[in-house]
Length: 266
Ligand code: DGL
Figure 1 (tube, rainbow, N blue to C red):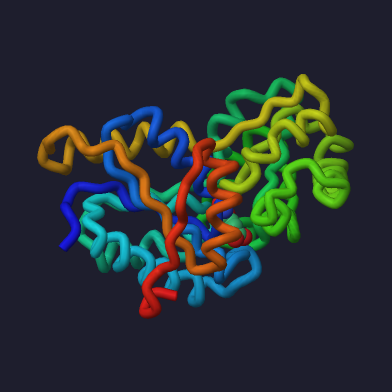
Figure 2 (figure 1 turned 60 degrees about the vertical axis):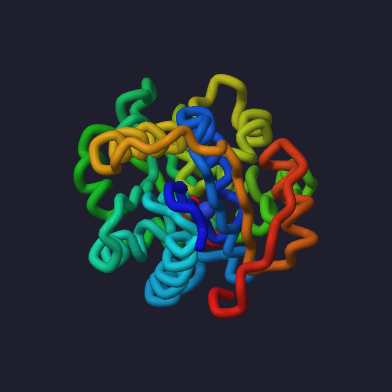
């Protein structure tokens, strides 16, 4: 039996590590358990039912590992699964969505670009966000097939990644966007490349810090105060553990062993 009192975090792959960095910064003593569902990446072109089923499987595993709070570090999985996860599991479940509200507040040109997966852009949750904030400024959306795969490969600055980023940002910049929403947790790892292409004046907005803040609030109000945790972080994958160990170590910033999920959860 695993010790209780951990924060469970999952994403379709390594993108959610961009959120995990914010969680670690805000909650330095917590025990973290992270799953990169890289055996099923990308989520962006999968059906909502498929993603929902994966999200339930991963959440069950995280709870088995002692998680008493779950962070869905993935915009696509949040859109597909947060409602049913909250119905099924009676613990704090923190989801995320593209940072439309802060971007609308930040733009000076009055045009905001959204880079996200097709799954996120086609979701009812995103449509509701646009309805709520899309009156105030022009919001231009851009699906980015292939970009998640580049980050999964650790290709943060290769010729192919650059080509894709150029292709996806060009229509938004041509429209006059001065603010780009990074609406997928993989994209913050491409921020230096995006700035290089879009210009240093571009504002890039993502939701990682807000998610960590919200997690801390929910834990303070809903979970009993617990002893100082052991500040560990454990990593699991449904993909190739050797490859995952390499890429997670790079993106997490320290040498990190990634274990394969038990067979029932693959
Ligand atoms: N990182 C996920 C997100 O925030 C998406 C990834 C995918 O398409 O697998 O939307």
